[in-house]
Length: 538
Ligand SMILES: Nc1ncnc2c1ncn2[C@@H]1O[C@H](COP(=O)(O)OP(=O)(O)O)[C@@H](O)[C@H]1O
Ligand SMILES: [Mg+2]
Image 1: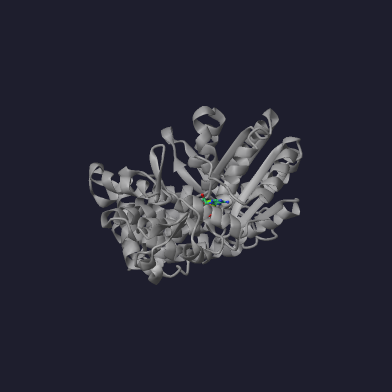
Image 2: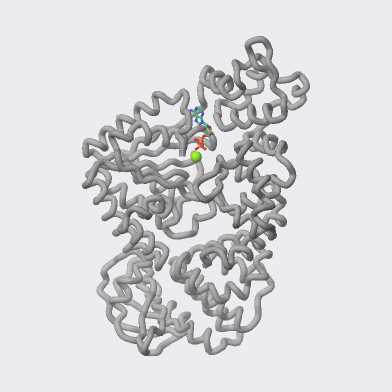
């Protein structure tokens, strides 16, 4: 991507470049860049990585996505994906993420990769939009933050001030504890704003235009949208050497917010283009025309005019093989412009279109956003639930809880299987109490043989007390050993073993009568290791 022109940020760039110099000399540094939306965080990061290219020849960078917060390692994956084609080891780590997504092996492999890169030369690793990062990637960033100081590594995270959950806060605090430098971006100074407006409007701004722009409070994105909107609406005119607003635009006043400025900019697009953009906005910050076409049920060829209009006016940017919103806020404003029931219906329609086109967890993200409009895919979800629980347990837990509490409950076997999947998802995300409840209600409805088997638990003595991250399924598989004795149902078992380690193992039937265990170890409180191995038949 072309580096954005960065004006008025010399001081910040100087600080950041000196940190890059430290990192290049082997004293790794941590950096947090913060500021409000549109203030220029991403642009500053790009400028830094470009300016420091000689110091840090290897750059690994990606961004968290709003819709991917519940997908384990989605953010880490965004950093690795661009490198996969030329690097077998990166491709293997990505395969690990897409396969089981088990935290421990993925984190260890990524740490090994970073150490290898750093051994070959100074390296920059940068994560944009940290406030949307998934928990597993945040854990990885904790670990990287601990080792960065001893490596020729510049580790940068960019986040929106005040956004992000408690995990992001904890990461920021920990990094600051490791000596991270925080760079907070404020408004651009007035002289820089006038220069920016002059560049955008094609001449120095006259008094009325300067007055309008002062409402943008030094936010470059806001300024761009404001001036772009005026230009698109033919509201700018030459006034001697200056460019000023047309008197007929006085009634416009100044948009009170950035989103209003963006909204007005979008008014100038044709109705069909806005329709396409609304669908695209719900697909995510980057998407393919083919996906939009599938959701709209129209051939791609019919959409080319709208795509051209959207890229021509700078709302969308063309990336290799995809289109992207020029700025996440433009996407957010479009998505918010829909009434919530329409948005839910559209998410439901997207989910249906993606069933045959995308991984099940992608469909699940849209089903979660679809609310009641998820109903038509309940049958599909019952079959796919196991895979979604495997790959994105937090997403599965939220989706299944939402479906089972807010919708007319599906009856019989369907309900039992969904509740059993929910129990597993809750257990996998460390919510043993809620898992127990889900298991109980799965058994309360007439438990078909399949569901009952899924919830039947067994005791198994042993275990070595070696603490690892929850989700370390391969380690568990080695430890779990032979088929456990049949035993109690989950609820009793959980009650009895509270405060201790629980292990849930899913039993899979392999070829030739082989049995294989996969499961998740969950840790509770103080207890020493008294593993309870659960058995889940499918
Ligand atoms: N210092 C700057 N000078 C000129 N334009 C800028 C500057 N910083 C950002 N921009 C422009 O403002 C818009 C928003 O910047 P961006 O870096 O995406 O903001 P953020 O990441 O903080 O949301 C972009 O279109 C970018 O080109
Ligand atoms: Mg940004």
